[in-house]
Amino acid sequence: MNSRSAVRLARLQEALSRGGTIRLSEAARLCGVSEMTIRRDVAASEGVMMLLGGRLVMADNPQYAPVYDLDEQQDSHHLAKQRLCQCAAGFIEDGDTLFIDCGTTLMPLVASLAGDRSLTVVTYALNVANAVSRLPNVRLLMLGGLYHASSQSFGSDDMAGAIQRLGINKTFISAAGVHVERGVSCFHFHEVAPKRGAIEAAEQCILVADNSKFGIIRPAYFARLDEFDVIVTNGEVGECLRRRPSTDDTSPKILVA
Amino acid sequence: MNSRSAVRLARLQEALSRGGTIRLSEAARLCGVSEMTIRRDVAASEGVMMLLGGRLVMADNPQYAPVYDLDEQQDSHHLAKQRLCQCAAGFIEDGDTLFIDCGTTLMPLVASLAGDRSLTVVTYALNVANAVSRLPNVRLLMLGGLYHASSQSFGSDDMAGAIQRLGINKTFISAAGVHVERGVSCFHFHEVAPKRGAIEAAEQCILVADNSKFGIIRPAYFARLDEFDVIVTNGEVGECLRRRPSTDDTSPKILVA
DNA sequence: CACAAAATGTTAGAAAAATAACACTTGATG
DNA sequence: CATCAAGTGTTATTTTTCTAACATTTTGTG
Image (cartoon, rainbow over all chains, first blue to last red; front, side, top):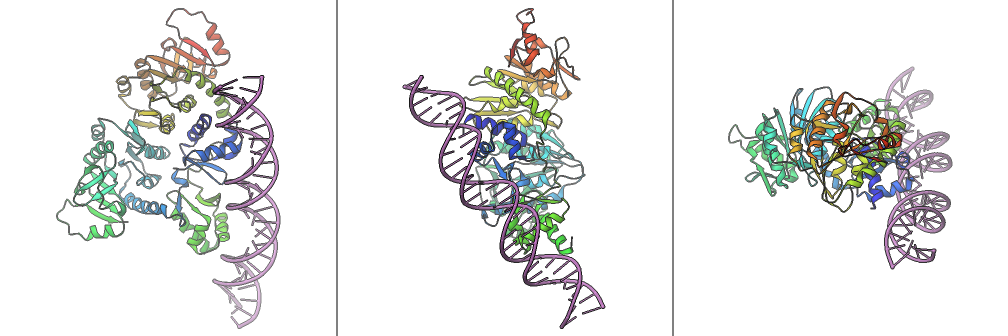
């Protein structure tokens, strides 16, 4: 990819970063090049953008992500995430202030916030912020810091403190690893501070993790299972957890989507 | 529209209610009918769903909005902005830490950061952050706060302080109004704190404003003209300013793109 | 059951988009 | 200045999607 191509892509991405589509012909006119060149730019963008019926869209735009692609099994988790989030969304009430964790798991939850109720979302993830910024009924509180491309999120020294100074009702956490004895973990250490801050700050903590994450331990440990009030999961794992005898009142409630 | 068609539509709508697309063939298989029937269902859905390149998408979603509909105003200034930014980009050196202001003026500047040199960008604007996050050679430092859709940026009480705690080399500022006697101004008051912080923190301040902004005073004043080291502008205004007798050494250098 | 009406399926052709091939332009380099 | 290579534009071809027409099946009714 050459530099002019990069400039064109950046410009188109800017136009598309808040959602929507651009007709291929429009994009060509906008950049002052031929449609063929835009096609080549998109092909060189390594999946950042894509063409959908002659229209340019951001590939990470949930609006245009394929829901069902039985030809490609790789997308099997997407459906599961949608179901999990649909389930998790049941806890949200009008007026809530929600903390939403980074990653892709909770993106369907963000989409479900659209509506009449008035909400506030606190996040340190760029993809979450982008999605929330498009919802007129949701106030967005962004936690800044140094950007980590691996998780599309920001990290800073004082993030846990900053979160605890906010009045958060409900915290939605995603995880890369969930283990009954070894607790909940993620890949990146910079995620630990915001997750911990949000868990400690919120009245109610909801862990959303599909069954592929269970029994796995990732480098960055951040919470015990019993620190959560609710665990939303699916499949056999969920049934197993649910049947497990509750030792006491602090045990999380298990929800199987 | 008959009742079976309604049932199929409801089913597909449910699948798409949280965003995403379904391939026409998948939808047909899912409903156990031919593709033609799905086409007819969609046509009868009165704009609820639509087909985009053989994929089914929800059309009533705010995210489906063609971004550019031959928006002349946006485009007319764009070329000027590109030239201004090309000019402004000349000041950037390897290793710099740049503050980049909100708005659309400086977006071409961000695009031009791509390359081999290592840079750091500080910003409080969501659109800038999005663009920078795609550049592997640029570190991104995000300043968070409450989101303001009007300027796609964040505001917080302590932003000026937070900025001054950073080591910023060069500050690039955009403005909605530039007036020789009445100084530089913008529309939104929440932009004042970050702009002031960045102006005071940086070694070098560069104002980038096309000639349509000159002679205009906007509600939120934030700086005198002589607080800038460089003013990048274009057209007659630039020539005028350049010919103006420099009163002293503190006068900004005028650059006409 | 026969019939009509609606709904759906099939096929063929038109339109649009994606791909491929080749020609032209531009900018860098010796 | 010549040369080369990368980038871009143009054209032709293939593929896919869309539309329309007509055939077939299903549904409802007397």
